[in-house]
Image (cartoon, rainbow, N blue to C red; front, side, top):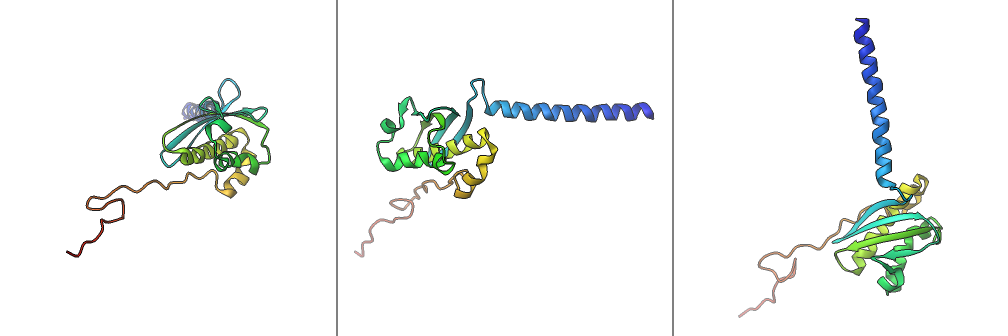
Length: 161
């Protein structure tokens, strides 16, 4: 009976050790070899892959600067909102690739991705970002067109005769 208890204890210790290793692996997935933190943001039909690291505040989107990619100041403001919330506009270098959707959806996806990457970088940044709603994926998407209608809800013009 004693030998069986010893074996059970050893198995439990191995399970605990394996769980710690798995947690470390999860952290390493988010943090790759160049001390960059990776996160994915989504909005409408856009998907943004974001790599964040400590730096001078350079933002690169699909190989272009933020001013070249988003010419409208409103879209630039949307992308920079997470950095303004944590009051560190110049503290991080951001490299991102964005696919799908239009410019507005892409800016929202970038905001979501940057917020998630900041949380991975420093967990203490999570409460202020969560409070303003930047960590929540905006699930609103375009409603599909229905048959017999001109658009999703708009019907054709009614003709009495």
